[in-house]
Each structure stands twice: as structure tokens, then as C-alpha cells.
Image 1 (cartoon, rainbow, N blue to C red):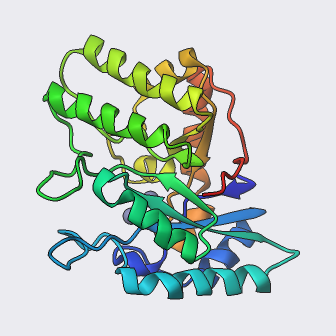
Image 2: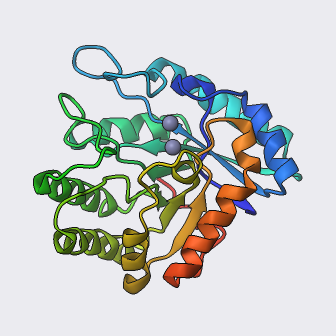
Length: 257
Ligand SMILES: [Zn+2]
Ligand SMILES: [Zn+2]
């Protein structure tokens, strides 16, 4: 990989390694563009930041932004470092969130939808479900997110596993792929899913994306610095893309927010 835009930091509470450790690992891996995209903070009406330890608190955002920017300055000329975030599209919080991200100079956002609605009272959507409503809601919500035209990439679009009728899955996921194509938003084959043997990447999904002519790239979704050196998962993802007839793009046109 010459570029990876999907990198976490310790702030989310379930990743490890300093920003510098990731930058050094990226250099060893021959990566030329390293985008940090830690999980976006949200402040909920109860004052909390969500039901699980999945993200930094809003107060940590300025420090995150400053740390990544300082590193970008330091590595200038040898490694291009970008300041991004992996954002859940929650309609209720979105415009306020954008304001905060702009204030902190965030350069790009990835769409990473792990919960539906506004998260409050919702289940994680990465578990396989037989519930067609959940599939439809996932597609409705992510299509709406894509239509904002603000996301540079859609990370693990195939996160939602559906165990129901294959025809229903195809119909809904084609709708997602078309919205991505119409809004020029590349889709990400997620290497963490391969690394951890998760239900995604789902080959059925990527065959649809190939038919729909989506732009597709790889994302390390690094939660440990050494994930950037995981050549085996990268190779498995490239093999998957080839089997499906997808020609990968290697860099992302960054969409300013
Ligand atoms: Zn994570
Ligand atoms: Zn991620």
C-alpha cells in the first residue's frame, strides 16, 4: 500500500501505540500517505460519549488534532500525514459535529457506520442479522450520509451482516453501491475484518460493487502500529478484489469538509 487513510490512536480506548509509532511503521511499510482517522467523539444528551469505550471524548479532539498536525510537520518531505476521523453518520448530531471538526482543522472524514439512528438505544450493526428492517435502515442511513457529499470514503460498507434472503441483500446493497458511485465516494475493503476473521469483507458485497463499477481501495483500519505491516491481510484483500473483478485505486481524492 502506498497510502492508508484508516488509522486509529490510543484515544479511542481500544487501540494502542502513539501517533509516532504509526508513522514509523508506515515508513517501514513503504507507505507514502498516512491518514489518521480515529473514531469521532460525540457528546450525548446525557453528557456521556456513548455506551461503549469506542471513541475519544469531545475534550480530547483539540489534542488529537494538534498531535497529528505536529507530526505532519515533523515528517514533511518523508511521509505525508493527514488529519481525519472515522465518523458515524448520526443525523441528530451531524451539523454540530461538522462545526467542531472544522474548528479543529480536520482534513477529511471516512464514513464508518457501526450503529443506526443516533446510536442511543441501538444495537451494534456488525453482527449478522436476519432482520430485513435493520438492513434497510442501514442502507437508508448510509445513503443519506453519502448524499451529504462530505465523506472521502466509506469504510467497511459491508459491516452489516445479513442472513436473510440473498435477493433482498443484493437489492439493498446495490442501492448503497449506486449512491456511492453517484456521489463519487470510494468504498473500502477493510483489512481489520480479514485480520480478525470477521464477517466482512463479504465477497457477495464486493461482487455487487464490481458490477456497479464502484471505486474501491484498501484500508488497514490499524489499531496497532504493526497492522500497517500486515502484508498477509493486504494480499488476501487484493486477491478478493481480483476474484471479484475489481481494479483497486491506491490513493484517495481527499474531499475537504
Ligand atoms: Zn476501532
Ligand atoms: Zn476504523
